[in-house]
Figure 1: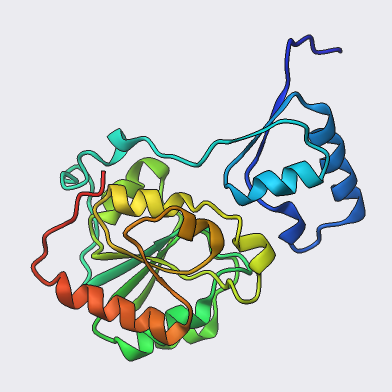
Figure 2: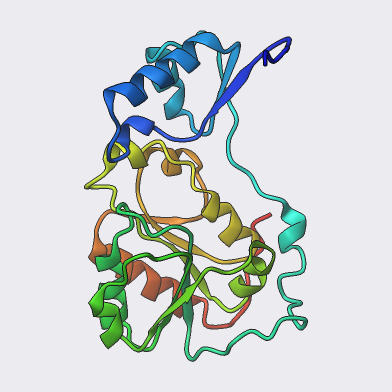
Length: 232
């Protein structure tokens, strides 16, 4: 059946040409959509040029965002039976696809055995190295409504994406998790890429695994008082 409408819009969230398996047919479909809709909204500034090059006529930037009310009572999680973890706690929440740099997490775990690292999200394939690292805890999937409470367990948020290997994909990523971490009062360490630099956030951006580990150590040392920042 025909769908009657006055205008059409499409939100471009990622540089799809950077995904593994991006094919000519996928490119053709995407170009057809970008060329036919009345408006394209992009999640990052870098995607504007991508949209225009692939057939879009009018494009506006519509960045990611979060519902701050979900994080307004992050210190009040008495209704959940949350586990207890020793030492300072670092957390990652999200997908564990091929762009996730497991080696950075392993190096952090090895060099900082006193830091508990929580990995929250679906992980289809578990690296055998994690089995020998008692300070890495694979939490698995957490209900979305419980995720803000889990962030109260942490002292720092991690974004270990392999930008060197997947620059085309990652340079245009506007990471939702940076907003979530900071809404929960967590300092953030991330690898550097183009769009995350444009955010000009308080996150510590680094270029190597060694810098990543050092940045985590420095932030945990200076945050030993236990006081949480309020970024929003």
